[in-house]
Image 1 (cartoon, rainbow, N blue to C red):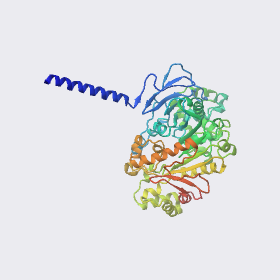
Image 2 (cartoon, helix red, strand yellow):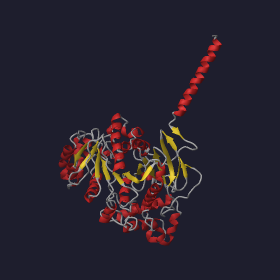
Image 3 (cartoon, rainbow, N blue to C red):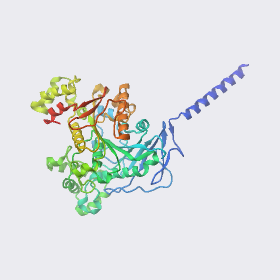
Length: 542
């Protein structure tokens, strides 16, 4: 064989090998997108998503449309296949309330998206986009109070891993927020009768879309769990009190969001709208001009209106976070207050999983980043007065592993107390099980400054540790805990019971028993695990 022939054979071999590698790469491609891929018919028209690592994903599907301050309506139908591969627009928000300090933002990695008032869309992740099988459906309601946030805001919100692991259908959505979703203009004419809770009416419209369409995506419309964190948890609570939402979901999960214990009364909501008109120098008969006004001008006036009403409102009218955007006791969409017997009866058959994180907002405060016990005791005295020593002793009793001074003063008692109140109310109705958790795992990132802060549990229950390494560190320990926690959420969505083989037995919560699952390096159940801390901090038995 001469050198020329040998060169040809080598070249041919290389070309053949390259072709084989390219073919293998094509068959192993994690993304499948294009004509005929992941195409599903909906009530409004056909949509086409994409497949990533075997999970069919659809983004930005319109579930409704709405004019400003009006109730949502069904979206305008379409006939051609609608490309649904990217997130839809998000509701405009107050940019002044956006990202925090650099070291905090590093953990969150916010994606604020593209804003547009035409924001009523949802996203679906499913293992199989056909009606051949009915899977549990999990509908995620994002945080940000009732004023901010979106379905794409945080990397932890991605639903692919949860859908794949649990063989469930995951749904997330955008809806109207702040002045667009909760400005009560009902005093200015029947035209605006739905304005007070327009943002919550959007959520009901999304759940109605799920009821009518999710079977085509492989979901069971009669096995729907709504779950949310922070403001999303408040939205879950609100929907549990809304007659029009009854029957659209069968289970509920509230994560660090048990702060909605009452709805704003119409008298206060109408003070806000009157103050807003005053800021804009508008008379009541000019209210229609609000519908066409640039959002930035409307927002600026609403910000001043809230400040003015907060300054004059009675303490009992201000709520946990002052007079701010949120659900309104309007007598129609929300006819009852959460503590009313009629409200409790609405969701009496709905199992509830509820909890919070150990430190919540403590790590956000630079003043809490201390290094000595003298500093810890000084802060405890400022907060608890002559009960400071009792508080320090209670922390050591309830959390004997506490060693760092900062760990004594970062413990949350507000959100935790709200979760207990909500769990007690639900458990005492006696018709559906309640399960309580407390997320106590502490992140090692950034010298441990994040601890178990607000939002820390979401990468774990979504099984998105790798997407959120800035917050979690991405260690094997974090992945192991995420597996346990995500499987609990999946089990609850499937059956109403979060127990699975990877966790110790998790009993139902009762006011007397107080069984609480602590999610940490070693998950364990304790009765009333922090009762001494709560008692010392609040001055009353929890």
